[in-house]
Every structure is written in structure tokens, then in C-alpha cells.
Length: 115
Length: 111
Image (spheres, rainbow over the protein chains, first blue to last red):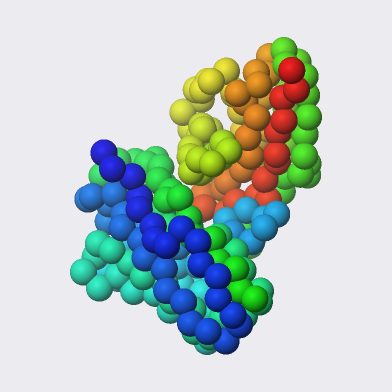
């Protein structure tokens, strides 16, 4: 099966600019996650979707970050305006609900550099 | 709140030597622990989970609830084991099943 797709792979912007990332999960995976991974740290969950609904966005900085999954498939994560500390790799992952103890499958990530 | 600690950022061993990557967790509920691995230029992927009690690529990990640990072990390291390893704790609350990751250990296996 095709894996989780993300684009772009790299993005360089200046602070206060806006940026958007796109994720296409594995076909049929109802659950989608966005993580932020700052250099030297493990991935940190930003938001979890199940189909097109938000399950948990408690760690999403809502003053500048937003995410949507309108049709329950693809998702976009937006940062507006970006700050220097937003420089990180943004990972998307998806998971099926059809099995117990099912694993998350990760995309290649988008590396964001904010100058 | 849950927390995962990996005390070693870097670990180097020689090929054929035993390797142990440490992971400690704090969580008041019943934990589900995982090890994820990221090889150079590859995606983050699941290596093993405690519930399966399996050996993957020669690696094993035992959940020790008394010590709140889930150390990853391999008796004879290989050069292809060089990678970044992340320990992760999964909590389940309602429909939310979320992973909390440690900061990772970069393992280098020297020839």
C-alpha cells in the first residue's frame, strides 16, 4: 500500500510569513495526526483527527496554528504568522481503526526553517 | 501527565557487542509502550510494542512496571542497527489514542 504522503518536503520562510503543509494519509485510515519535531527532541503531538472531526487539539498553539481535514481524507496544517521557534519537522501520521493495537504510519515530514 | 525519558542522547557500541537503550516512563494508568526507529533518510517506523512480546531484528524489550522502564536490548549489535531510536508511551482516553515520545537515542554501531 502507498504510504503517508506529505508536501512540501522543505520550506524556508521569514518570520511573520504564513505557511501551509499538506498530508495525504494511507487510504482508509480514519485517524490522522500532526506532530511537531524540534531538532533534538521527539515528536510532539499537535492535533488528532478522526475522519473530519478533531479528537484532540489541546497542544496546538491556536493563536497561530490551524488544521483541517474537511472531507476526512487529506489534511492541511497552517501557521500564520510563523515565528523563529516554529522551525521544526512537521510529521503527519495515520492509523486505521480496524485492528486493536494498530500502529501509526508516518510520512516523510516537512522540514520548516523560519529565518 | 505522562512522560517518557531516554537518558542517553548518543550511544556507540562496537559490532557484535550487546546494546541496551534505556527508556523510563511516568504514567498513572496502564501503559502501552513502543519503540520506534528512524534509519538515515527513512521514515519513522514501529520497531516493536510491549504487548506483542516479540523479537524484531534481534531486539527485545521488556516492560518493567516496578521500575517503570522499557529498555531495548540486543545481544549482538550490527552496523545496520545504527539509527535513531524513540521510546513512546500510548495513552487511550475515549477515542483518543496518542503517543508521547521520548527525546530519542542515536545509536551508532562501529565496525
